[in-house]
Amino acid sequence: MDNVKTFEDFADFYPYYLQEHRNSVCRRLHFIGTTLVLLILALAVFSANWLLLWMLPLAGYTFTWVGHFIFEKNRPATFKHPFYSLLGDFVMYRDMLIGKVPF
Image (cartoon, rainbow, N blue to C red; front, side, top):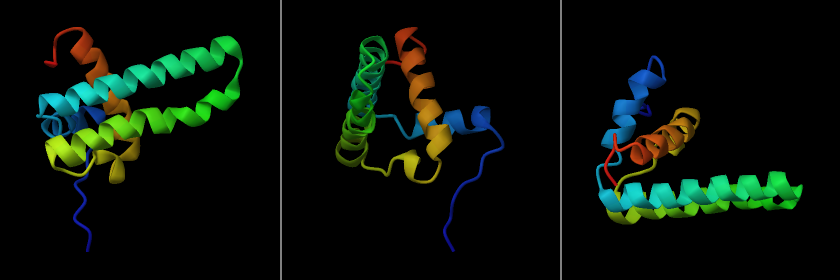
């Protein structure tokens, strides 16, 4: 049987998410990927070029998965907790911007 940790809510998940991102290079790669996602999304919206949206997962996941597989040496939480993980990316991004989570 698959051993998948369960969480009551996102507040319960986020400390686990941060534990899976202890490596500073991994966090920085997440930051780069999330920044690219936001820039591509803004460009798509302001230019009304919706074909750019196919680039969102490529930009986001390339950087984050390199961070996990090469530097963190773990499997991304996306595989078992996709929605909480996506939310975690944006919350950690904000927390890095405000200094709550170190770069």
